[in-house]
Length: 241
Image (tube, rainbow, N blue to C red; front, side):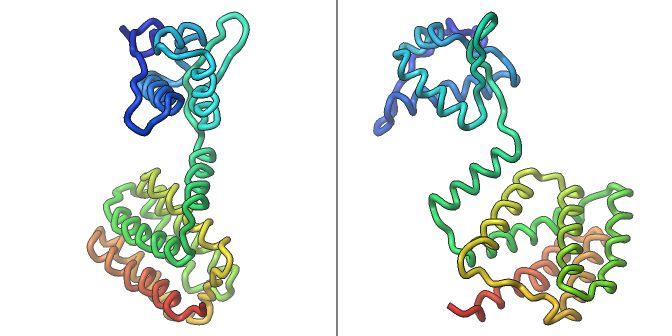
């Protein structure tokens, strides 16, 4: 029987320490991911019979999945429970919520983003898209023109966005965006005044870009570590408590 067949006899089995609603939610989540988005998972009553759970239990599980963006409830003719997929914004909100429920310090968050940047730079060195490489050469020419904090910020944003396009690793992108946002909004997070060491920052960015253009992942990782991560970690070590 297809995974989305509401008559499929897949009774919910609870693992030790798991309540029935959580177990039902997981079974439904597996069904949703096993089928294309928009697939009818079943009606309320058919699913309750199929999973051998009560109507209230199924409704509670459905509300959890609706909140996750994985389930759409349609009423009227052709109604029922339909599988869905959360958009990027919903996934980012979920990760941000995790960071806030299990609080990380801004030091830990910035450490994580700097590690991700190292791997992003290394992965970008494997890019063979001629147009994207041309854009990287063009953005390298902007380094010398940066003179203010606003210009540095604009460069960093454009540089990171270009690396995301060169690498195309959605998890890297989501983790970096959310963690960096979380770090910079935490109480006590320092403002990185890059323009205090403008020559060093420019030299570091030139080395990273040159390593990427040279198609040398190991060198790109090394330059990203010493010109980005090492700088961030040194700043954290010097930041006041």
